[in-house]
Amino acid sequence: MTLTDGSEILKAKAQQLREESLPRHVAMIMDGNGRWAKRRGLDRSLGHSEGVKSVRKATELSSQLGIGYLTLYTFSVENWNRPKEEVDALMHLVSIVIEQEVPDLIANNVRLNLIGDIDMMPREARERLLSGVRDTSHCTGLTLSLAMSYSARREIANAAREIARQAREGKLSPDDIDEQSITRFLYTKDIPDPDLLIRTGGEYRISNYLLWQIAYSELYFTDILWPDFGKEQYLDALLDYQSRERRFGKTSEQVK
Image 1 (tube, rainbow, N blue to C red):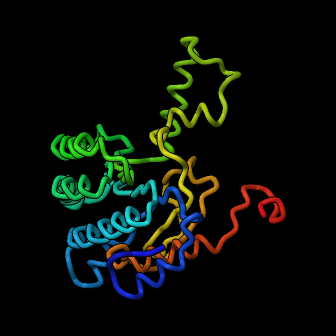
Image 2 (cartoon, helix red, strand yellow):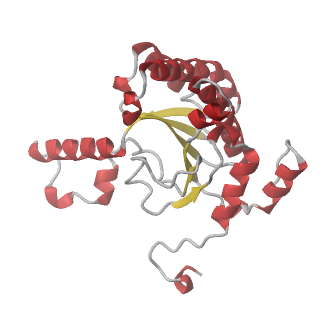
């Protein structure tokens, strides 16, 4: 594949990619903002501000490469337990940044989407984010999903509750409940499962993120902290992904 901008290193790595083998959907756990700031003697909120630049780079590269879906773990339900000052700063940062980025998202045909328990968010932040969703709803390129106030276990529990309710009301037969019917009640019902999950920051866990959806995703972990994760590092992850054989329970011979 060819990039029209960037360094020679970026262009060379992009040329190694096989367009037909790119992931359709990439999910990311953006870990390490606070540690990035702490190592520099800065307030944790400045690490989140710096991390915004990496979000922009990941979005730009995904769009340039023709990747259809990018889902970012922006704020978990568990994150509400962090110090109030950090939570307030992060909510303000996310809402302001999205508002500022909407014109560029539209210009690049990027559609904004939200998954998670959005009602838990402060009213101002929620309204600004939902405004961004509405303003980009006509875009047909990359779908950028922000997992806000997200918990995979809560998502699955909510789906089970709704399925039980519909079964009680006679709208759904228990005998008809299968993997596809459960998927229809998830936040991601209109989004294909991730092909690749990337986690930065040196941690080797999933942290309650897209547990149902990543059943067959390729996992890529890196020690690089999120603010230092740029386009070159993203390309490295994509090249690693393309070096793998995805068998989905079959043998290598069957796949070939």
